[in-house]
Length: 259
Ligand SMILES: C[S@@+](CC[C@H](N)C(=O)[O-])C[C@H]1O[C@@H](n2cnc3c(N)ncnc32)[C@H](O)[C@@H]1O
Image (tube, rainbow, N blue to C red; front, side):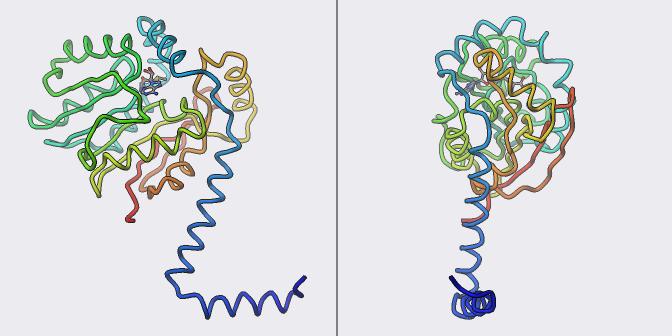
């Protein structure tokens, strides 16, 4: 055991002996370790990808009835933070029924492209019809696939958008999805995530209980979005926290931190 005075001297000695860049690395490592610990406290997602695909296929024809009225304002906030501009290449992960396609694609001009990926062919079919109706289908390319292995080249996207999707990946997969986002983003690219936010509240506990008893139907659950982004090597540039029926919703804009 080291007496308090001895401990302070030891800390002083380490400050003198360890060069500033190494001290910064140790601090960042400690912050990342704390954030990773926090991520372990979130509820697991205990359904397979096959179940997710099947559930969203079945939900696709009436998904908008369930979600549209409550989620629109968060999506609009996220798209405004993302600020798509003419000529950009943007990827949406978990496109769903394509409710963000027209608002994003309409800002990209004829040279811009909006790529969309989703595991469910049923959701993608609804999204494709919506893009045609909104006359943005020539700017939109949809593909069926898994966000843990994105079929896009390194550094090919100006921005990535996820709306109510990151929180449906199981805890060990969240860093995998975020590292894929980082891989496909250009150096100064932007990532916008809208997700349920874990808070200490009765509403959160009730939601987590419903997620626990209906793991396939309610596969999303609140997560520590900002911590997950920082642990995956993103710097947060803007963050908004709002509530819907008492549940926290994070809308966060981030950019890859330099390596
Ligand atoms: C809760 S919905 C959100 C849809 C849309 N982003 C929105 O805000 O309306 C989640 C979407 O993620 C898709 N999804 C689930 N697991 C996925 C995976 N592993 N890879 C890609 N998409 C996935 C689902 O099929 C579904 O369309």
